[in-house]
Image: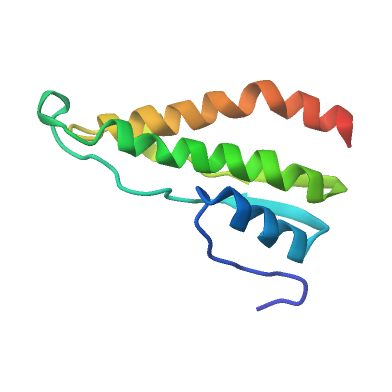
Length: 118
């Protein structure tokens, strides 16, 4: 692994644990979140029981941005990975598409604010 790059696994839904992880590694220049954040419901929407649980991924991304931003370097970057179903869903991927789309929309309003803050 190249010098200066660190990979850590954590539960992005654990706000306290996530905050401690950021404190341990601060400051950092690039923060990439490709978190899964729990279970995903797959299959026909009308037969789906776990649709709501699929949104744990969104709450995880919100935690990454909320608690990671204060530990970024002045010219740092945050990258959130949403996935292909957000733009080109296949049958049975309604929860993946919904959550991925929500993540992409979530990034729009705070992105300009972070640019000005840095």
